[in-house]
Image (cartoon, rainbow, N blue to C red):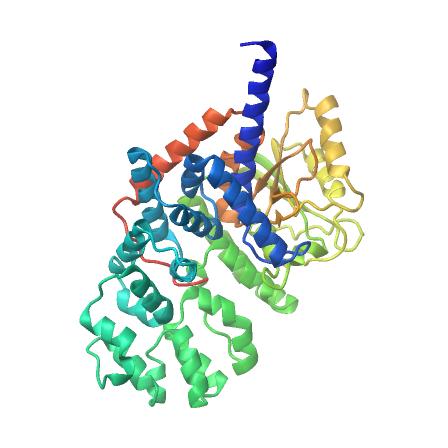
Length: 500
C-alpha cells in the first residue's frame, strides 16, 4: 500500500469513527422537541437526517445502537427506520436485528410503542417483517385489556394494519362496541357503563376517565380527588400542581418509587417556598432515588467535582420545561451517591459570586437565572483538586465565551502532569445545527445525557467520543452490548411503564 493510500485509509477510518460517535452521542440527548436555542422543526429535521445517514452507511452499528442505552425517542426512531428499510439479507444479522427490535419494543414505554405502530400504519409500512413485529407485540401483552382500553384507537389501527388476531370480546370492543350491552371483561364493561354512569368513570385509567368526566360535567377537583387510585406514578407527578390549584389538595406522590430525574423535575416544579419548607423530606427522597438508580446501574467514582450550569437557558423550553436544570440537580444526587468524595459548584445566579449550596447539599433549592459563567465555578472546582470534573451544561457559554475551553487547555499544558484531572462535559441538550450536543470547545470531551440515570452508559461511551478507540473497537463494543442486552431481555416481558 502506498503512503497516499495509507493516509487515505487513516482519514476514512477517522471519518467513519467520528460519524458513528456523533450518532450514538446524539442519541443520548436528542428528543425531537423544542429546545431553548432551537425549535422543534430544526430538531426533528436534524435528527432524522442523522438517522438516515447512519442507517444507509452503517446499518449493523445502527441496529446495535438499540442496546447502547440511547433514549426512548431514538430507540423508537431506530426501530421505525429498520422496519421501513426491510430485513437485511445476511441471515445471522437479520436474526440479531429482529431480536433487538423485539427486545427493545418490550422495554419501551407502552405509549411510545403504540405511537410507533400508529406512525408505521400512517406511512403505509406494511412489509412482512413489520406485520410480524406488530402482531407479536400485541398478542404478547400481559395486561392486554388495560392497553386495549387506554390505547384503543392506536391498538385498533395496529391490529387492523398487521392483520393480528385478537379474542372475540376484544374484537367486539374494538370494532362493534356500540352494539354491545355487556362485556365479560370488567374494564371493557366499565368503559361501556361510564358513558351513562358517573361512578363507573372512576373504574377507568386516568387518561380514559378524564374525557368522560368532562362529558358528565364532573367538577375537576372532585374528579382528581376520586381518580387518584387509577393514576400511574408519572401521571401523579405530571398533574400535581394543576391538581393543587383545582382542589387545594395535592395528589399523593409515591416518591419512594419515582425515578430520579422525574422526581427532580417534580421537585423543581414546586414553588420556592414549598421547596424550602419541605427541604428535608425532598432531600431524603432525592437521595433515596439516587441510591435506587445506583443499584440499577452501579457507578463507582473517586473524588469528583461537578460544575453545574443554572443559567437562564437551563429553564428549557415549553416542551422540556426545567429539564436541563433537573438533569443537573439529579446528577448532583447521583454523583453524591456514587463518589467517595463529591462537591458541586454552580454558576452564579445573576452575575454575583456563586451562591453556596447549604452545607447539607440541597441542590434543588437553586433556580435558573443569569448568564452562563462556567469559568468561575470551574476554577473553584480546580482549587478543590478532584480526580475528575464533570460539567453539566447545554454547551452555550457567554460570560465570557470560550473561557472553559481555554482554562482546560492551559491546565493540561501546565498542570496536568503534577495534578492529573479528567474533564468530561455532559450535555442534556441536542444542538440541531451541529447534529450533536453542543461542545464547550476542543479541549473538552462532550457526551450526551438525557437523564441522570443514563450517566453510567454515557461515561462508558466516553472513550470512543474521545477518539481513543478505532471504528472496529467501537463496533466490537456495540456487538458485546447487543449480546448482553439480548441475553438479559430474551425471555422477559416485564411490566411496562404506561406513561410519557
